[in-house]
Image 1 (cartoon, helix red, strand yellow):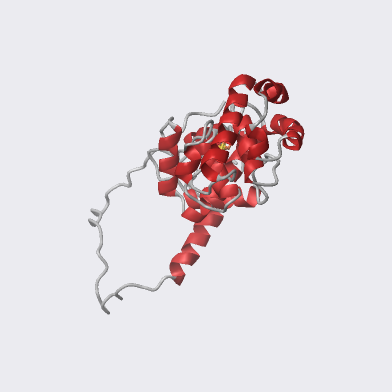
Image 2 (tube, rainbow, N blue to C red):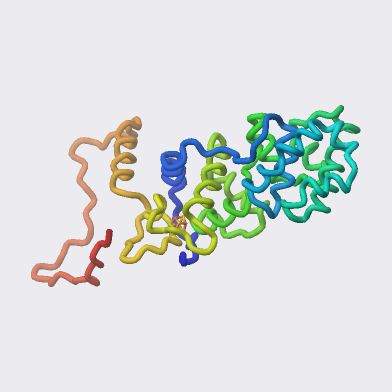
Length: 274
Ligand code: SF4
């Protein structure tokens, strides 16, 4: 079981982003859809369910009720039956109907590309709105924080919060804006395939060297690898230099050792694992 994260040290966010990008270059939203309306329905159905299960239900749903106007007129019991297998079917059917009716009444049947307007729809909160805005409209207004993003952000030391809104704030503050969407997509993939809730596969995880929660026997914590340190040094060299030192300026030296003073030996270094 992974150890709890320690957020007191600096978190190498750039290195985490790079490794996630290398590991999951094709990460994307896994809910099948062809337009904003379909993704909105699928995201509502995905609450407390899996994308795979939702994808088994939506083809028939979209065939029967292909747009907001059709769905707004659907009989509640038929809708409940159609989404039954995704769980919480009464509530989800109610949300789908309410959402479709609100789209017809307030937005001429179209899905608005606006955070506030989306969050006013029944069954839609900030997470769903972020999915729609980012995936369909290419608008990065926030970071999708689902159960995987929340869990992994905590384990990686990117947040100490448990409330999704506060986690999102922490992530937005640390990540470059162009990373908000890909980072969340990749973290979700990583959570589904490697960093499982109960038994994270730390031994197979590309993020283990920099993860404060990694549970790898014999592992020594590193912030970044030697390769990444070398890369950072190279970048540093390319930066324009500051004020040059005056010629002949003496180097500041520490307190000179008294002659014959014995060397103080510290605790022996732990043998490097891996
Ligand atoms: S699987 Fe990776 S990200 Fe998850 S706890 Fe282990 S090392 Fe950290």
